[in-house]
Image (cartoon, rainbow, N blue to C red; front, side, top):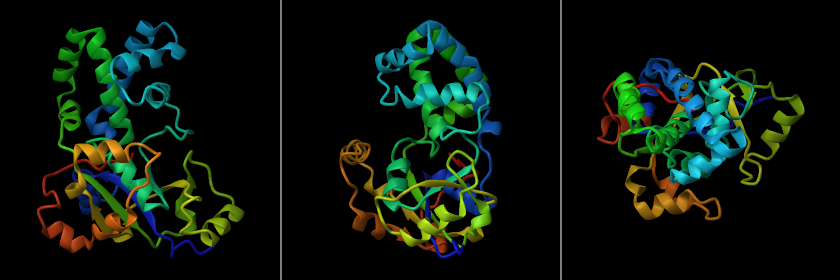
Length: 260
């Protein structure tokens, strides 16, 4: 099962991409205390809603576009449930550049969990502004991360052996599935996601810096799955690692990597 020739793509932000290239993929959520934050705010949201099924109503009221996914993800983090597509800390990739680009465009932090934390903040703000003020002081580094400018980046990853791959929920892929993956590579209709272990700079073959594509129109359009992304434009954003690092597009500040 030769998966080394496959290209995978990881959507993230410029700050996280710089950290991955410097130190390899790390769990950013522990130093940011993101899980502690979720454990503190999720009971507040759940209590105000009255039941899990009604939490979506609060997210809608707060103006969240993720009123379905955010409650599921936040509850999974609160319950420390790792065997899920809404699990965080691993390095996630997809076979599709467009899918990874759409993911990178969704939020400022380059992380799905931090995107949903940001949505939770919107909900708590309408419930208890005093609590938000306290959390802003208690979790200052996390809150600062949520306010960074949008800078979407996609990392191209290759040379990955099958032994380093697991499914999106953490399961080991069956040999037949890997064979199908190799056979159908490049087919946009077959675009599963995976986790990869121990990602370092040597696994990264290119950087797609999408910062120049960020406008309100593009962000809103690309966030809608009914619209396809201009793949040719995305491919034109491809840069070598050295070129990206040497330009202003490559952030130089110390940063936490954002696997998901």
